Image 1 (cartoon, one colour):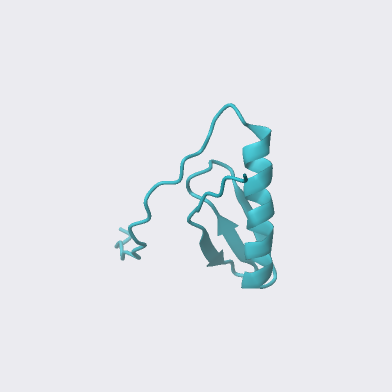
Image 2 (cartoon, one colour; image 1 turned 90 degrees about the vertical axis):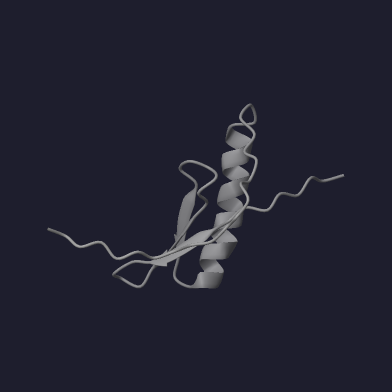
Length: 75
């Protein structure tokens, strides 16, 4: 039986239009793609690689609550 875990993925777009996908639960687990779909496909692969590389440190996904954008004045 294969164990399945769900991870939250944050997707942002850089100034060049490239989509950056990150998994906050796994330090250093990120990738990019030209489309959102490509970024999602690649982040699945990246998660598998990250988990395989460090089997001794199991990453249990945190409970996703939400994402907020805040405005901060720069003095």
